[in-house]
Image 1 (cartoon, rainbow, N blue to C red):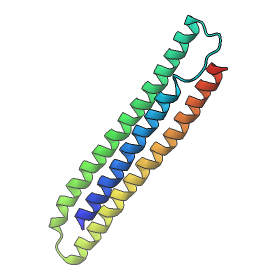
Image 2 (cartoon, rainbow, N blue to C red; image 1 turned 45 degrees about the vertical axis):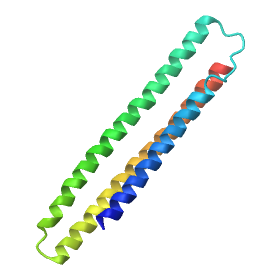
Image 3 (cartoon, rainbow, N blue to C red; image 1 turned 90 degrees about the vertical axis):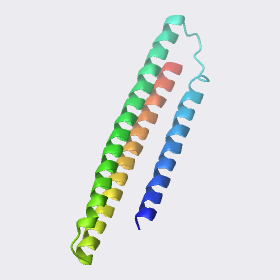
Image 4 (spheres, one colour; image 1 turned 60 degrees about the vertical axis):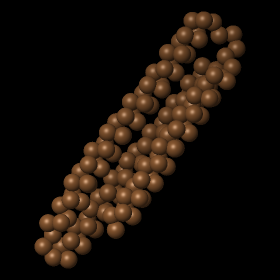
Length: 134
């Protein structure tokens, strides 16, 4: 039972990592191709600073998400080891169900937060590109 839960968590983590890598590849690949007609050196430096601040902010938020997910994972592993303290089968079933719900609840919450952040980041990125590129 735990093997399938761990395998599902592993697949979800791999998918999340792949998604993040693809998003960063898109962000980075799209920036150099943005034409900036008549941009002076000062304007280019200003845009580079805005872009650096944007990327830095996105990476800091991702670091926070990873920290929260890691902490939740450790707590769930500790709770999984406490399942052996169950006195009977019914208590074991109840604790297992509670742990399962907490694991997937925290995963769902984390992914929803990340998706919301990605939406905000894409909006901010689009704003930077269209305002500065115009």
